[in-house]
Image (cartoon, rainbow, N blue to C red):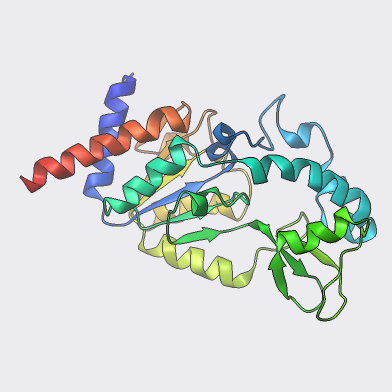
Length: 260
């Protein structure tokens, strides 16, 4: 069994050798910023509440007040959160010219706050609200201010349609334009770096299989095991903030050495 240091070295070499590195990030990327994940045994949010009661499009339309009270409470952690060492390490990796882009399942906007570029937010963003009738998009504060004033059916100023957070609810498909952009990024990828994703939510869980089918390589940093671990070049079951900065520092050293 390889040591932690050996795995760091292997992953750094994979990144150096790859022309198009894409990061796929999940809830484990943001737990170190104080945002609870959804599926961890014993601690995941969906073990405490029924997602189909509090986060499905059908429950939202049927009882927006109940859903919005829950979302306001859970949203506090998101809006207070700041990028952690893992987010910042990804930004540094991109500035070193070794990260093409990020596909994220997270709705917290922390990659943007960390100033990473070329991000595809697969499940939308909690920083926006959207009209369910005309599709008009607002900053989330436009919707939240209505709710705080007692209006639990916040409405669009353009058509009076009901507003919802601009995220993908259970029962909703991912946006076709988002999927097309993600497919294009995956098609050019030759190393997919999975960070903090359990790889159980589809269609995102297909991406590791897609990159392997085109001859690209796979690396995984995740606290828990995933079904794709046995197909990855390297797997590290540690916190991202404890691993990724070390990997990126190693990459930077190698780049500087090669330039001399």
